[in-house]
Length: 231
Ligand SMILES: [Fe+2]
Ligand SMILES: [Fe+2]
Image (cartoon, rainbow, N blue to C red):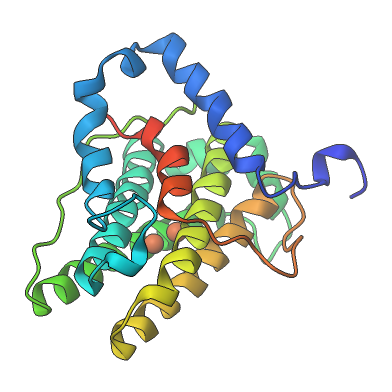
């Protein structure tokens, strides 16, 4: 595992990846030229905080939870769409699935992606319920475009989306005031890290390359995920 494909990029790797994906999307669809289409999803993310986009200290717990929910909607939709569009035989017959050719892992890839999809749906439900319990209004899912055409591209995009999710929770959690909400957010955060490791491995990256993962503020997260949000 020493060739360059196995060496994870620096922490700005996901940014580079999404820039590439943005170019890919831009050539396929003129989404970047239509500010209105990009608008609503970005607005939902921007709803956190009254000041600058990264000013979590000016945000309520509900604002921060809605920020998390916006990302969870994206993740949940992403995996649900993948599972809708790919049969179990598509996935298990792909080269990516050969990683699981060991007898104890064979034919488990689709099931493991189903696990991730189920987690994301549960994260959406839990955050929505908590936001409602706190008197807030949960944001709705947006429309998204996920730029992948193969299993390899799917696992690469999944790898980046999960890494962004992990860094987003790490960036927001210190600003959560309610200790119960903080505990819930941390329990989700560690699951996102599990997802990230899973897709690191499928993406032929080192499973756990860093002793300390980056925390990203909202500006940084927005910069990465906005290209995936249509409205
Ligand atoms: Fe999640
Ligand atoms: Fe996740």
